[in-house]
Length: 430
Ligand code: EPU
Figure 1 (cartoon, protein in one colour):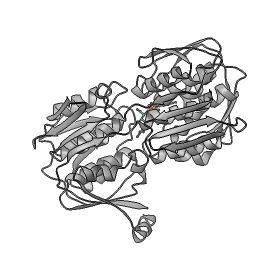
Figure 2: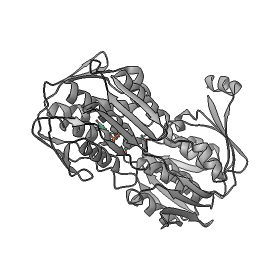
Figure 3: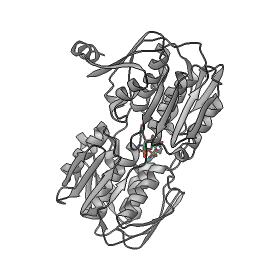
Figure 4: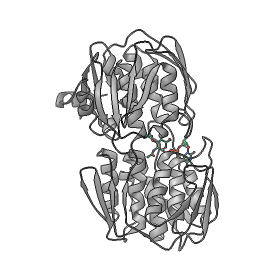
């Protein structure tokens, strides 16, 4: 089990290239199950969640290999349609195979994902959507078992208690591509990753309009064929590097960024006093030492993303005053609060809001990563904390950030990845 050892205080300076989007690439990979012939996906991040999806697809009959950022996929066998508990438990996005398997193979058996450290995370909206398309779905031994000789287009409402659902919209949209007739998804998620999946499906021959808006229309087609497609840049990785640049009072040029996907994040960063500008094809992020406090509420896109909540909270810990951060997507997504507290942050949680009182400095400490974005916040804190910070359980960060250590080192950060057997024993006793 690896850990990161960091010595804070260096200003980040230089260029960093942002990788392809994890949350776009995962459902796009799953959607290759719908196709015939070979698909070439470009700009696919080399992270452990993608490796897990590739393994899952191999188990479902796909032949897959990777050459750098390019992934080549071809469906070779369609006899096995079971996504087992062990895989789904490790990565919730495994549920993305449900819609494509059902539409293409007429049946799917996918283990019901449990909760995870950021909350309960139900899949009722995925099930309701597929049932509306005519699937019969039962629960057997913890698996969702879905069958449908052919799905039928209809109107599907995807709103839930916390707004729209990203992967739920993907499930219904993917399944509807091969349905008979037209499907209209109302209250669809508008995230850029949903739009990217729609663009990919269209490139394979689907007929989807309106993706990126709350109403998506899908006209069913007879078949989809393999294609070549480039995944969008990861807006959350970009936002994480923006905060890292800002907190170290640095100046970083980010390449391969879609700033139009980051309007809410850039708005909040500017409110804090961070400069974000586009120059010569790059996005330049810099900040002066003075950070203003601000309030932020996480919301479905185009609102402020929940996946950037922990990182922004870390930045606001060094602002000159009090900030309020309200979480409206995952009410329990505050695992980072206690660990940031160990580094000198002054944060009080009141229900689904965290009140952050700005402090003058952060102090290095031994901390534990609890989930992907919480770990990113701890790395950001470690960049600026006085003295040494050791972050254990960094496998969480490897799920979603490609080469984070070398990328930060090239920008001047003092960060090392260490594999320490003794430490591993300590952690196992936690
Ligand atoms: N929800 C339901 N019922 C459902 C599905 C969702 O009530 O059937 C609720 C959820 O519990 C949550 C809200 O709806 O309160 C939104 O969840 P959503 O379904 O949109 O989340 P997701 O699709 O499972 C994706 C990302 C998450 C990201 C969320 C929100 C992927 C692989 N995951 O999850 O990313 O936080 O959308 O934007 O795309 C991450 O990358 O760190 C991450 C957790």
